Amino acid sequence: MSMQGITTITFDCYGTLIDWETGIIAAMRPVLPASVTDDALLGAFAEYERAIEAEAFRPYREVLGLVTRALAEKFGFPPGNEGVLADSLPRWPAFPDSAAGLARLRTRYRVGVISNVDDDLFAATAREAGFDVDWVVTAQQCRSYKPSRNNFQKALERYGLSPRQVLHVASSIGHDIAPASAMGIQTVHMHRRFGKAGAGANGPGEASARYTVRDFGGLLALVGVAAG
Image 1 (cartoon, rainbow, N blue to C red):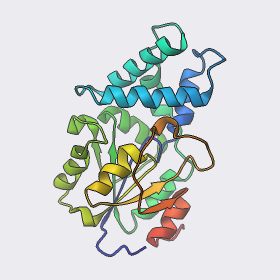
Image 2 (spheres, rainbow, N blue to C red):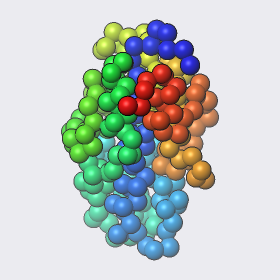
Image 3 (cartoon, helix red, strand yellow):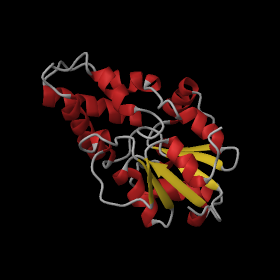
């Protein structure tokens, strides 16, 4: 691809840099009935998270608590576990190529994160995963959740960027690719669920990214940065 004019590469975090599906499953499995499949859990998580985020703004820690309460009602496990997802979030594992991939990109581009999360939760994730980026825009700062375009607009305004200067990379079509593309931002779908059925924790989406890669190896090749 031509990177002419692109100065900044931005990322979604959870699902793109962080393997949140593995983290969600590990956190919830001890309280779930054995009959509940991983796919059923992830599908329900996506449904409830999207619906709760669309309501009046509340911190992501509270969103996760309400999601857990809804999961308990759906799947029939005991209430009182509302903090399990938020408490485990900083330990959700990074994809093995994320930290090194971000470091390689920063040799040529500014790298930002636009994430549906609270400031403290992302900071804990970054420390645990060893991520080093140039800036972060969170849902807490914007008081809105993607797919709201507000989150992308806040990032553009804060860092003096036009859409044509940004390449946004994300695993979620609905949360990220659709709104960013609609704003004129070039997008890359990092297809972390390649080979798996369904949309998983991302939920459905109906947009098309300009480019698709499976991992950082594909992304680095796409933007012309050596893997190192």
